[in-house]
Length: 74
Image (cartoon, rainbow, N blue to C red; front, side, top):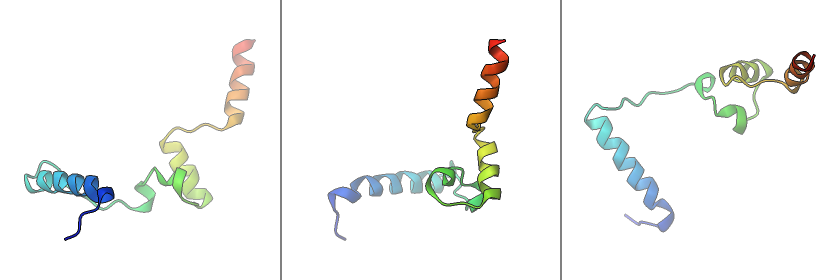
């Protein structure tokens, strides 16, 4: 097996996770696209999925802050 400097940390993390899975301290599960919240920042999404993930992370539209400022100032 060839080890490269770039893969050193991947190997370390892999073994760390593998050991915890073996000890049944962690359970690795498949996560569907709908459950991958990070995709909102990294993938092109349908409007439906984007809106759902936006709600999950409680992202607000710029309009929300404009309206809030109007009501707070008065």
